[in-house]
Each structure stands twice: as structure tokens, then as C-alpha cells.
Length: 499
Image 1 (tube, rainbow, N blue to C red):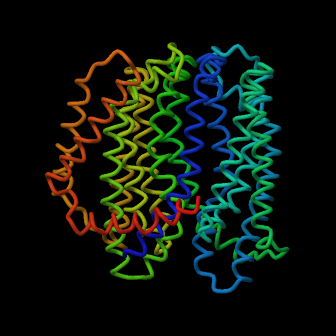
Image 2 (cartoon, helix red, strand yellow):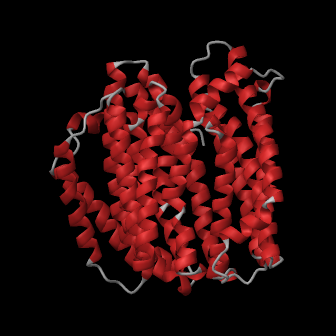
């Protein structure tokens, strides 16, 4: 088990380096975005991002997950190359077809999506935006096959270099196009296309030895059969995460959507910084743990516990600091966004927990049940967004999002327990209630005019009190603490003593 933790920590640090760096640079871009773009422009970009998400989902067919799963079953280089090549050509063919339809239907799509009339752009301009987003989304999803290969091979360093490079190119072009050429929304879209072209070129170069001219129709059908239920899963996650934007745009307008979207992005720091690096290694490591039987199951149980505890530690400190962070980083017209972040963060904790609790469905290839679990959450989301946003504004979206992720987590856990039972410790959950509540209340009472000092004081008090209460209530036993410190010592010096 200790070796599994070392692998997890080592690759999570490497994956995390790229994610943390890109998020850090992204934070420094917020003053530029909020100064040179209006809330309505920000709302337009948000809806265009959602279109790109849908494009990727339509083309992807869950192939990325299928690549990792089928690659883990391969025993020879030839079989591995066949998996990568078959997936790549399948995605490429689908991308060409779907892109043609999106270009032809760009005007109707623009009319459907941009309904409020608050945008200063003409409908023809918005249709052109849709065409650009379609191309950008296709480039990104084709890259996903190579990314899945890097995950399967645990090539975290190559992934990090490629990802950071793409982000730096995009940021540099954003500054050039938005500040220098004053292109606004169009500048952001051009930046995405150019950076995605370079990223795809890099990924193909890295995976070129795995790309042969072989294509297996039976393997393609089998991978699509495995991955296609994940389309419903991905669509459901899209509905939970993002469909609220369409309701807000209609019921409250693009300006309110822009403020909500900024707050949502600040809340997404939790899954981006904690869950994304973890899942990049977890998606391949979990199959190794499955092969270890009961020993692997014990490790999975520990992962579930640690994801919960460290998520709540992050949520406590970040919730207390985020008001001051937004006041420092964003233009005053966006300041109201801080109010929704703490509530959303608690809802997002269920995302990380679901990654562990639903692992059994991947082990036995029952991806249909993962789709069903996500559909239940999506149904709750659609109902809540429709009935609550018109009544409560974006608070209706916030409350509904939390409920939808909670329902999804419960459903996935119940389904997965049938095939791969995990231990859910009620005593741990009871201990964590005061561990979170007391630090949050104490930090909320701190009131300092200087925003930098305030975020340090509030966030620091929250984190330190959380750790103190967790130790007092014995959330971790001494064996867990010793094992964790041993894993850190085994990994940390090797990664940084060379520099």
C-alpha cells in the first residue's frame, strides 16, 4: 500500500505542477479580463465555452476513458499501438463529420443560445463565434487520445510540459489580442484555436510511435460500446455544471450570468487543484489496485477518506479567503461573485468523492450505471434550475448544483457497492462536522480592512484550527500520519534535490 501512495503522490505532484501553474497565471489574467471585457462579454464567452464542451462530448464518445481501460489490458507493444491508433482515427473521422454540421448550423445554434438580446454583437457575429469554437473544440478532443495515452503510461512530465506550453501560448495571445489589438471576445477565441493547434501538434509528436496505420473495426466497436454510456454521463455532468447558464441568461440576463460565471470559476479551483491532478493518475492506477484484490481495496478506502478530509480542509481555508481574493483580483462590478463560492465548494466535494466511490463500475465495465447515476443528478439539476432560478436568481442555481452533485454521489456509490464494496465510516463524518464548522465560524469573525492581511488571517485561522481539531478528534490515527509522512519524504527530495 505504501508503494501505491508513493506512486500517487509522485505523479500527482507532477500533474499538479502544470495545473497549479496554469491556474496561478489564470488568476493574474482576471484583472485583464474584467477590465477589458464587460460582464455581458464574459457571459458570451461562458456560453461559447459551453458550446465547445458539447462539441467535445459529441465527438469524444467516451474514447478517452476507453483508451485507458483497454490499454491496461494490453500485453504487447503491438496491441497498445492498435488501441491508440484505432481510437485516434475514430475520433478524427467523427470530428470531421461533426465540424461540417456545426459550421452549417452555426446561425441556428447562435439564435438558440443567445436569447436575451443583451449582447451588443450581431447574430451574424455570434454565428461566426460558434464556427470558431467548433474548430477549437474538435482540435482539443482529438488531442484527448494522446492525453489518455500519457495517462495510461504515467508520463506525467510530458503531459505537464505540453499543458503548460499550451496555456502560456494562450495567455500570451490573449494579452496581445485583447489588450494590444482590442479584439475582445474574438481575441480570446483566436487564442484558443492557435494554442489548440500547437497543442495537438505536440501531442501527436509525443505519441507518434504509437500511431500506426492499423485500424481494428471490432476494437473500435468494443471501445465505443464501453465509452458510449459515458456520453450520457458526460452530458449529465454538463447539465449539472453548466446548463444553469442558459436559464440565468434567459431569466436574469448576460450581466448577471457574467458575475455568476466568475464566482463559479473561483469555486472550480477545488476540483482543478485537488481532483484534476489526482484523477490524472487515478484513472490508470485504480486498475492496478483492482488487480491486487483486498489489499488494493483497502488502499481505495483510504483514498476515499483522504479525499474527503483534505477537500474539507481546502474548502474551509479557501472559503474564508475567497472574498478578499476576488476583491483584489476582479473589477468592482464583479465583486458580488464571492458570495456564491463557499456554498458551491461544499457541493464540489462530492465530485472528488464520486471518483473513488464509483471505481467499481469501471472495474467490472458497468459504465451504464455510471451514466444512470449522473442522469439522476441531471434530472435534479434541470428541475431545480427551471423552478428556482426564476424565483431566487443565481442562488437558485447554486442550491440546485449542490443538491445535484449530492444525489449523483449517492447514486453512484449505491451502484458501485454492488460490485466493489467500500467502507463508509459514519464516525468520521460526525467528527468532521465540528472540524469544519468551528474554524469557519471563527474565521468569519475576523474583519480587517486590508484585503491581503484579511485573506491571510481568515484563511490561516481556518486551516490551522481545522488541523488542530482534526488532531484533537483523531481524524487520523498515528499509523496513517506516519505512512503519509514517509511517502512525502520518499518523494519530495527526489523531485527537488536535483534542481
